[in-house]
Length: 240
Length: 244
Image 1: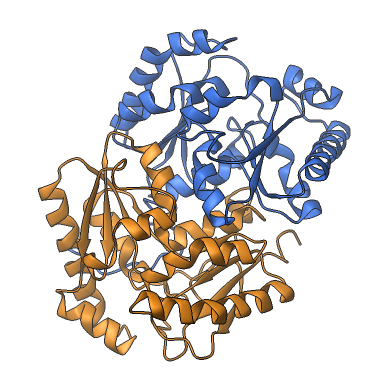
Image 2 (image 1 turned 90 degrees about the vertical axis):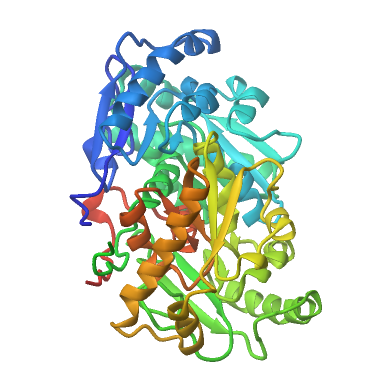
């Protein structure tokens, strides 16, 4: 199987304009494997958990369509859909990844029990029910939650869905400042997980500056996809 | 260059290791920089007492590698090393990976209605103690366990640590057979987790033949390392050494 022939990632897209920025899911350059983007008919940006949950039947139908098309894994570009992880994943037979928070318990083990820093947009919007939707509890896993939502730069990105060069520098600086502040308050943080799907657009400089691992939805998706094809994996003569 | 400092540290068992693409001793296995360190005096543990004797050796070697600068630490010993996961990981500040079974919990969340098939060399070598060390329990995650110990080809690979061309298709066929039998016994199987570090050279054949995802320690190490550097797109992805 070559890179071209490998089954694609399926992305359930909210109707409407999404950020076409490298690192964001709408952008072609974000993924090193083929991608099928599928707009969920009848969807619109949910403003609450209740509104997200109301869209479950629409998302299930769309996920099953992607499954029929032969995708290797399914994700969604709306953060609130992560509340539906269990139900959506149970509806199909391919891996479903709606949040980078899925990896938190395993990461906690890899870190010998150390605290995990969770990077979000609006910190006050993330709580136990988000953790539970990803299969764990804040009582079991020590975390610290921080958000970029008070930064003018990130609010501009959220509103415009675009990153001109001068904004990029401010976004990166503000994200780095948040990470450093979280580390100052919690020196026992061993790694970060970005719960917000907009942050990957600016994460690499932060990884290098901080020297701790920072995971995100993209690294989580890379893992899910690698179950069907690991680039460089040795190819064996055809087996019947 | 971004990611240049990101290095995987591998603690190697003393003695001959399989220098086969897909195994940890091979330069062709990883798309990032690797530093290997042989743990002097190490041998595969067969008992809890063996493990206790190994721990200080592995911890000292881990500290050495941490001083030299690594991003993630792993080792190529046998599956029992998972029982040292917590202590070894607590001893260093980087993520530590002693087993592919550390992936099971998140794979289960991706496929909550499906069963996970664990592929080991000896099926009896995995069980609740190892699962718990990896952060989960078989009481909460539906499992099937299979092994290749009954395969003459796999016993030969284990013994010689060499993979001549004639052996490769036999290894693949026997591994696929084990996988098929597990699916026949458990039609709700949704993914495999390949726990044995000898299997990655052959796991793609399993993926291709059975159409189910197969996750092994290399997938987990790729994930762990991506916390330091994720290739932003296909053009930036480091070249792998593809083998025909």
